[in-house]
Length: 614
Image 1: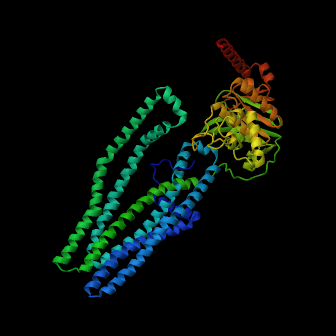
Image 2: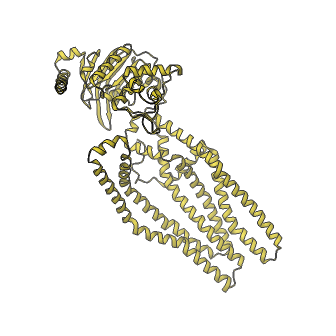
Image 3: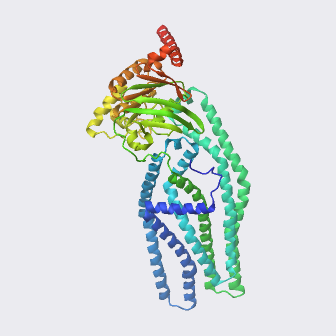
């Protein structure tokens, strides 16, 4: 997977600098205007500082000492004021109009690129914690951080030029005064760098505690946890975790406070106090005592002292930002440059719309070096109904993920109509399947949108198709009771009046997704796990009746629901242990027959107990 071996593993300086140039190129592709205006604004900012410090004040004082007329001096001041005013107007226009508009363009362009990439990487990436951590870091405030990276690069580039010019100007006025500029250099490059290193280590040590704090803060307002918070003593445990994390943050802070305070004192003294006080004393002595410096020269070196100090501070801060941004850009760059193993936009042969056979030939699959599927062979014939049964961890859901090409087999082949599925156009291949997964998710969209899920259905058919699908899944009556029916928003994420349904009701909507899609192959992963026996029976009747021309695959723990399947595969340890019809497997008296007998016995006991209680 992508990424560094860890945050503590610093990228090389050359790579960090290269990442900043990568940011400039990326920003240029998205919004050239932002790059140009950021560069021009930074150039003008440094130009203004240097001009005012090195030329403006010196010219005014020398003109006065030379006896120039007041009118001539005022004209010069007015011309400078007009030029600086025009620069200020340009800067205000940038900040008030151009940059907000450009930022929106950057936001749109960058996140479109990131979303396209995240949509294109294989599912395994999101199940890899290392990849996912770096994906979230790449996504976090990516647009503003990209712009900040470009700005820091321009600030460093023009800051270096401005610093060199400032040295030259001060050297021309007074050679010794240049020595004072070494002080803020020491303050920034030595002490400020050490402060930054402490901040990095401190933030790293705080990260585990901050994650616990963020987790507790998030859990406290999520509705999924609300019932347990009120019915159990878990709140006390969460509060203890929170307090422990707060104490952890405090302990880390104390650990570094004393050293950070000492370094900050040295930073302030070298960066500001020594140069300001020292240069003023030196200039005053040269002007008032030794009479070896003119008032104009004194004004230049004092003015240049202030400008040079802030230029150096900005320059060193920008360098620090470059290396910090280099780490961020490493996440972004690695993510965008990641070579997908199963790219969603991969092209290939058109699989057509007919499924005659789907065959697993000696398929093995390992996940994180653990074999999940082992030398599995099975076949699905078009228009037939199949059931995958077995205990948890038998590999049933993994088989479906391999079928849908979320993963590719480690060994063996999966064939569609006799051809390896890796040869087909991926999106066209997946369009052959409709799925209703057990680990479903509801989106904060309308009921209708949650059923259609972006499928290309003619507008004039959508309502009737969705209604029919909801009726078949058993969700229609409930949807009719919602405030806006099919147009009711699900979840409270963006709408306080949105509907939050029960687990069984949500499951019915997921099943409706498989009903509404017209395709030859339909997969139902535990479609009735949250339903009562009556609703389960009705659902399976509807599936068998409406999908009789489809190839059907059921994954189910309830063996009573798969008796009508044309063929049953019993899985264990990632391979087929038994296969046949329900009758054949019962007559065989093996694992399937034993599981069925135990389930029937337990179901009968529950039914009798329910009847007695009734």
